[in-house]
Amino acid sequence: MSIHNPLRRRSLLAGATAAAALGATAACGDDAPAGTAEDPVEIGFEWWGDDARAEVTRQAVELFMQKNEGIKVRTNFADYPAYWESLTGRMASRDLPDVFQMDYPRLRQFGATGMLLPLDGVVATDDFRDGVLDTAKLDGKLVAVPVGSNMFGVIYRPDWFAEHGIAVPEAGYSWEDYGRLIAQATTALGEDKWGGSDWAGSYLLMELWLRQQGAAFYADDAASLAFTQEQLVTWWSSTTELVASGAMPPPDVVAEATAPGVAGGVMATELRWDTAMSGYWAAVSDGGGTLALAPPPSADPDNLALHLRPSVQFVIAANSEFPEQSAKLIEFLLSDPEAAAILGTNRGIPSTKTGLDSVEIDEASQIVLDYEASVEQYLIEAPVVPPAAAGAIEAKFTEIYGQVQYAQMTPAEAADLFFTEAETLFQSEQ
Image: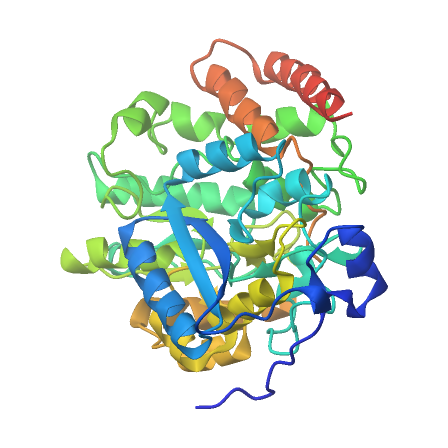
């Protein structure tokens, strides 16, 4: 199968935006050596992930080098914590790889500090699926390209639902309805199984809930919170009765579980990114179970507040000496049919048309695609790119809610503390 529209090589210096981003950096764009088989240019490419991701990525990179003999790619990967510890430590000296894998919540941390090359006119975007580039822009500039995409959904066990006569929720059901479904499933399933888990500790789910009401988690400039303490108290109180009644597992049970959630065979439902389905599939199907996806609950039946979110993104360092070659690697990995087939759905549902057409869609991925098609009418604009302090704010959100779970604080006391801590974190960015 051929690419629908051949990707064009563009000079880095073809556009004023890219030129401004590089300033006086030498050996870039048209002046950069093209590289030959005898004397190739060398670029660095780094990502986080497991050995399975490393294996398919290296195969795709090897194919790239076979087809582009003037470019040598030096690869490196690590697990998530070690990867980000390394990159953030290298920011000050701008010792970043030419191409590296980006996590969406960290995009502003790197992009707003001039670490990323603007990609308009550098990486071709005509092959991307509709809507997937919406979360790749920062202050109007394209600074990343998504490798795969996902959206929120409820992963559930349809075999358990059928066995116990539990109705599958349809789009537009409320959070209260979801709570009742969880309680019904917990009662039906018996000891050491639950209908679902405590959702109130997730700031991403709170963001979904806020957006369903026309509100937001972060202000438009990503410089402050956009909700009230009263809204946070409401959210952190939303599961109190479900946990107290035993419909949801207590926090100590969740903390001690070695294989929690739907994948561990102890939950009937789980609110997650839909592509988690692929990671759960083997564990559930090997045990004779089945999986399916349903829309998330909503505070407004006409607004599920869903959007396509990048599973991971690729970026180019602003100080790369070989931006054209770096762009060529990214385009190849995402839009070469052979490379896309090798990478498969390891990083989510492919973000390009060619990638989606080229991968072998397994049963789990097909369920994800069918689900996303079924809720397409509910897609809305993506939220603002999170602030640089998003990681610390998320950690603080989880930490403080833990004190609510263990009755060390009331929701009101915890909300007051969170707002104080969040303000400190925002100020640290100034």
